[in-house]
Image 1 (cartoon, rainbow, N blue to C red):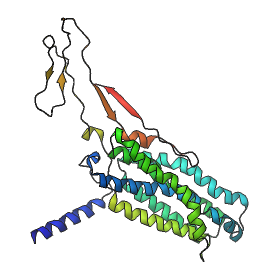
Image 2 (cartoon, rainbow, N blue to C red):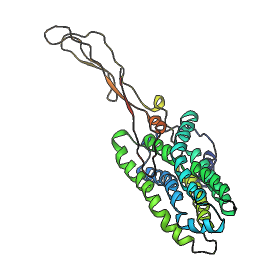
Image 3 (cartoon, rainbow, N blue to C red):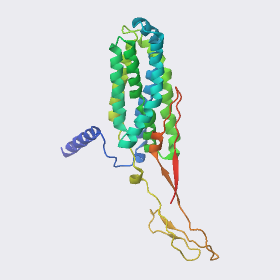
Image 4 (cartoon, rainbow, N blue to C red):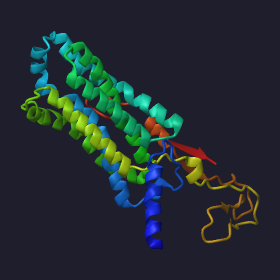
Length: 302
């Protein structure tokens, strides 16, 4: 009976913590299990791939949109051109929010909610200019994963392991625009015609929100909390002697400032590598359908 109560209490606590807008990050995300990290990559890759996917899914329905709404060609073209434009602007804004409020997870759900609402509105509109506006909002909502997703990977992986993680992540980013026209070609054959593409986007947004809610914990990692810097002591030591701090887990050491002949030498300095995951989020990137990430690293001389 006690075990059952404890299990129920843990489930309730886990569910309640997921409802928090800014849950505390008490454990280093880099210490998560490989299975948990895989789920995290899948969740952020789904959100990141949604942007490119939604930009191309309705391309097969463009002739039907022009015909049904009696739309001028310029307006129809703007639904695609402005979508790509906001794909380049919005990630920088989302990254700024992530860095300022020190959150990742809630931004994915908010952005997918914006994307879903804009998609639902586009389903029922009969005015091409209204669709142009909602396509811009769609783009803003779907673009969060392009920058904040990179920040999540930086939170969860040390520098030497990020290459493989980014490879899996960007596989979905590049796959999205390729799958969009294929899926769009199938769904426009339904009774809803081109409007079915927006209904599909609504379903995708709901799925992403649910998946993120259950699989993605808050990962925003504060360097000062989890990263240990090596202290440096410049006190002189006997000739040729190197003193190390006691204890097998100690990270500090003092190195002699004179060589074996008694001559003075430059005091030893430690080079401490400090990761800045926020730098990836603050890097604006996206031009057309090509994505690039600039990972910035600082080297601090202690």
